[in-house]
Amino acid sequence: MKHVFLCGTPALDFLGTLQARHAPVPVERIGTPRLLDSWLVESGLLDEAPGSGESDLRAAVGLREGIYELVTARRTGEPFPPAAMTAVNRQAAKSPVSVRLGAHGTSRTGSAAQALTDLARETVSLLASAEAVLLRECARPGCTQVYLDRSRGHRREWCAMRTCGNRVKSAALRARRRQ
Image 1: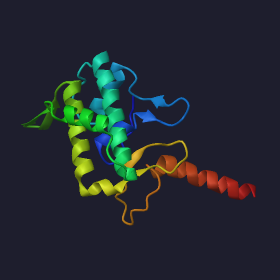
Image 2 (image 1 turned 30 degrees about the vertical axis):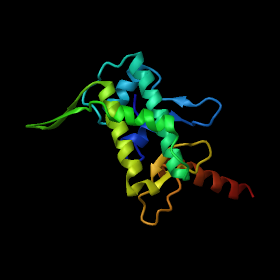
Image 3 (image 1 turned 45 degrees about the vertical axis):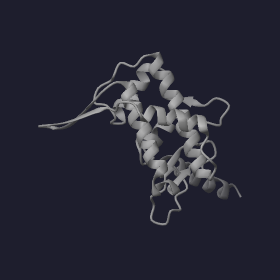
Image 4 (image 1 turned 90 degrees about the horizontal axis):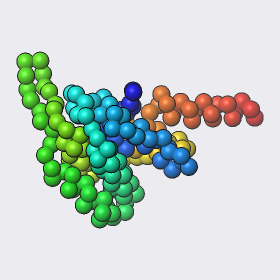
């Protein structure tokens, strides 16, 4: 499976594994242990699939939803939900992925749980950083992807121009032509 990474950090890209979050039927991109393994490798968190199981998948989905709650609270200026903060902090306190330097660069090995720890730690760092003010949610109706707006004027509207931005602009052009 080919996953999408366009948000600026693996933790925010991880939120995108549930697409169209507010739709009646959201699209789950890590609905099986095999898809979770695929995402962990494609994201660069691990070099090889860790052989995730159902418990890893449940942990991943739980962490993803906790991260989403925290990011949404930070983005909207609300207090962090205590349960989400506890869950992310608990995961962040666990053992991370092992990173080793070798003759051909670095290698990243570990379990799915260790990769989730790296995501939780990245979330903690992001939410406590000055960059947290750059958190945005895509303005395309139906898209709920959160990204870091690192554009020069901080006026980026879409998670990605090639997908959501292009769709919005094309729809606006078609509407103008119909008039």
